[in-house]
Image 1 (cartoon, rainbow, N blue to C red):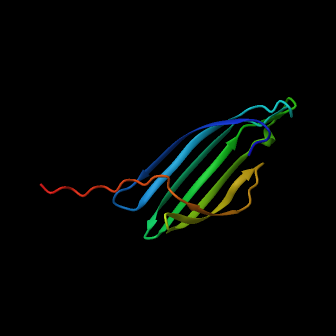
Image 2 (cartoon, rainbow, N blue to C red; image 1 turned 180 degrees about the vertical axis):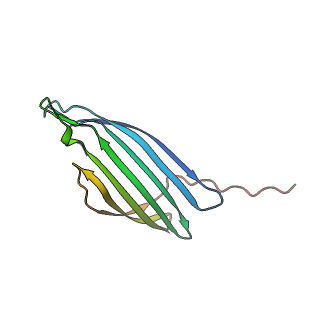
Image 3 (cartoon, rainbow, N blue to C red; image 1 turned 120 degrees about the vertical axis):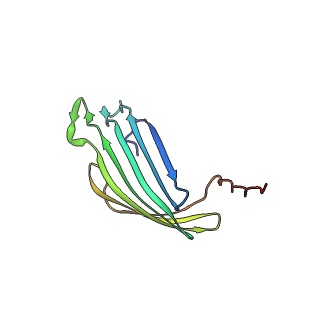
Length: 144
């Protein structure tokens, strides 16, 4: 969501699936550079963001539990630095899903634990996801 300016961001993502148990961990850390809106004489301040989650499979069902946050710098409006306008939020995001057809139908809830200067109500999401590619099925070992 922009406030009339361009935003640029960089993030490092990581993940690990475990072989012996159907569980994975995922996460990302990032930084968003927010350009000054010259027309409105407003600099919305840069932001740091992070997401950490753990999930897995249980037959046709999938699950994930994540925590994510965003921490912003002070805004500057008409040359005045507004420390009170810093944006921040810390949320939990549980998700359940079910494999259906070529993809997965899932339902998630986003609930803010704390925050300021951002909409922080509970949100619900229903989505259907299809992978762009599938991991190849490993070939069985050839007997010697």
